[in-house]
Length: 139
Image 1 (tube, rainbow, N blue to C red):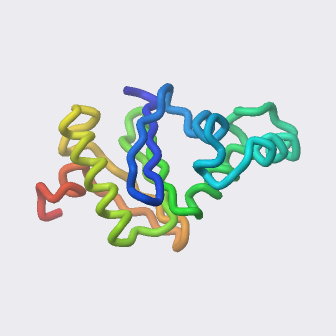
Image 2 (cartoon, rainbow, N blue to C red):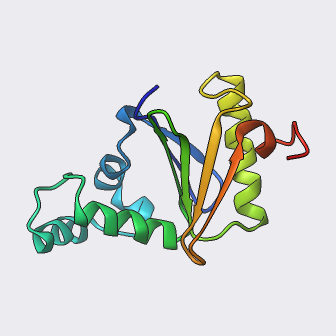
């Protein structure tokens, strides 16, 4: 499942990304992220990058989505799941618990799979596991 990716929107809806590329979903459905296709194209042009390149424009667009309340989740080789979000409040914890439960049930991850949660608002990173996130352990 290398390269797997997910978005959780501000309403808590979980979306698995075909191919695992978050930017592809933003380009395909910009309105969902509060953008227009023209704005996305402009950001890429300003960065001097081709549309869809995983470079500076992509990073800025994903950070903007996170600031708007989206949760960005991706699987990395030998590291586990990386979660980027604005802050870790009760709503975000609830959405992540639902995602972690689905990850375990669908065998995307085991109970001991590492989960790194990067909170952009305060610059903190929390390390946990899928099992702890869903409440199987007292972590």
